[in-house]
Length: 206
Picture 1 (cartoon, rainbow, N blue to C red):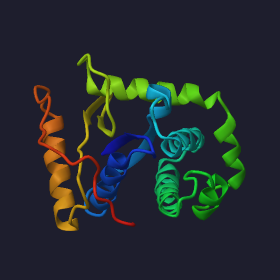
Picture 2: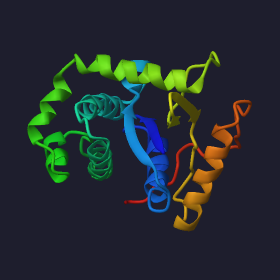
Picture 3: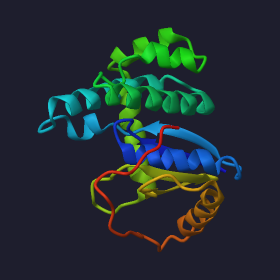
Picture 4: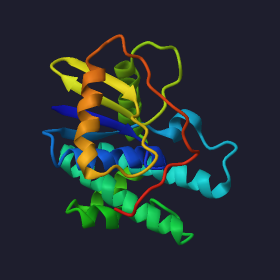
């Protein structure tokens, strides 16, 4: 099955969902592609502390590079390596998303592709991806939030906001959650399933 995760690297909820999907891929036949959804384009940086504003801008530059990676598996590897690098930098008080050439080289992609981070034409690709994310959710009238997970079956793309995970999921449960998600996604009358959540998810170092 093909699936798309619409994400912004500056969003830790996207990261915990991606961690779960990495575990899902160990026991389920899922072809996953990360797709950009830029919080910088949607919300800008007004009102953010300088450090977080810089992180959002850096995340947007990384999304431009992501759009330049055609192979889904390579794009997935880039995102995961990017997040490892960014989280380490943030913990040390350094600027996250700064070493794009190093991240590309780590996963076997030409570091020269980092030049796309400064190519504003890539914003067209990002905006198109955000439009796809909104379409996958359907017409609900509200501003979409990420992560958005969409499954693709034939010509149909069906998406949900989430699933939001407050922390790591045991491997034994990852596939079961996926199966439940697929069941819900195939029922068009299911709109939402939620409960209170913490302000930020707990994340591991993987």
